Image (cartoon, rainbow, N blue to C red; front, side):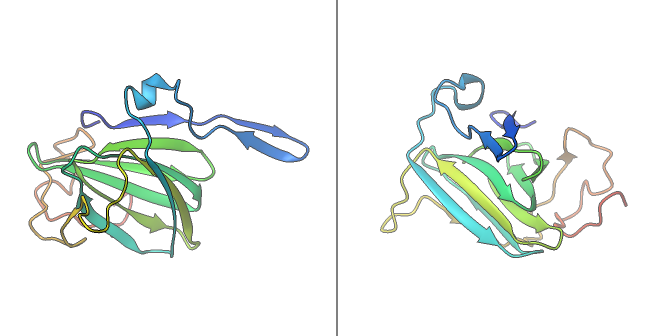
Length: 167
C-alpha cells in the first residue's frame, strides 16, 4: 500500500433483529492515528459511474465506508507513479483511509447503486475548496506500479477504470 493508506475491517454483531456495528471510534489509533474527523458526508452513486480524480493539498485525509453496493477505490501517487486499487463492499464492511495528497476516486461496480459514507479531517469550504481535479479518463495518469506490482498488464498505460477484471 502507498504510505498512509490503511484499511480497517469492521466487525458486525448480528442477532435475530439484524446487526450492529461501530463505524468510527477515536481509540482506533491503528486507523486514525492523530487524525480528527471534522465532517461526515453521504453520497449515492449509480452503477458504473466514476467519481475521479481529485486530491486535497491542505492536509485533508478521507475515510471511505461503503454502506451499500460495491466500489473500486483508487489512489495514485504522482511522485512514485504507483496506484492502489481497493475493492470495498457493504457485504464486508471496512474503513479505507486515503491521505488527500494522493489523486483518488472510485467507481461503482455491479448493477446496484452504491452508498458511500465518508469522513474528512477538514471542513469543506465552498468559498475556498481544497480540491484539485483532473478528468477520470486523464491520459497522462500512467501508473508504473499497480498494487505493488510492476508486471501488471496495465502498467505503462493510461489508467482505465473500465479494464475488465481478471483479463
